[in-house]
Length: 320
Image 1: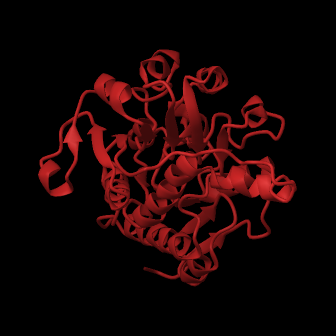
Image 2: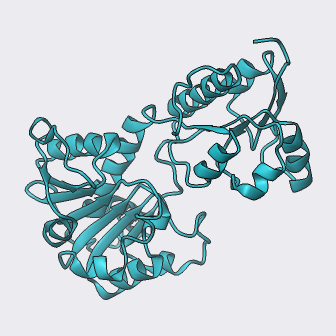
Image 3: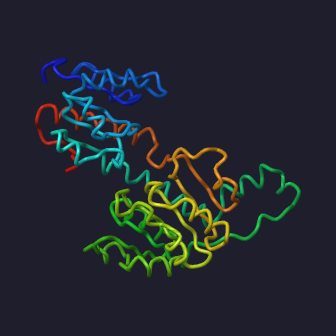
């Protein structure tokens, strides 16, 4: 690539490895001090940009594309791309990239941790000790075993299948629902069922779908009412697949015994949100892929996507 021929802007602070990989190859406009970039600065850089290194902290829509006459590619440093109007990008001749694959194990690990926490209440047990109640010999209460229970996974892609393998180590039965049944059910030792059957029979329901118009709000009051009374709910996909008010009501009423979430709607969740008034929920701040190793790998795949697109080559991970 001709040195400095193209201008690449980053929508937020980049990982150092990605910054170093791009700085000598392109005219790099990067907001490295952290925090939110002022809108005037963002728009000024957008007007110059041939590519955006996306930290997924903005909406890529018609309004944005109108401000970016030179734009050729948006490479998102994440798997999900619900902030990007892909159809609008393609209509403007803008290619879109993401980072599938590199974060499967990290997301599956945190998912499994939240599954265990929903059964054994690890976070709540720590709070019990920290509050002095254990020292006062106050009982914590009985929790739930995983062995022999049924885990229902909605969305059996790479992450869902990695979670299934971890759950099976705990001697759980795994059922799943997808838009289409997988051909490798026997190899994975999982059973395909309808979504209604999954909700009715699972002791733990875990959601691992992408957010799109067909999945938005799919876990609503009607869905929670179909779940086995006293079941646990885990969401590691996107907050928007859940009706937050319906989840709150199901937890408050006892229809659900517990929820463990790494994603919420809204996100970030305000500290005074009503979900945080419940004692039967654990919420982590969207950290499933947030290990240094995976973040570096995601950043470098984003670099590769940008450089390939700018040279008119096949992108390693392009959203078609």
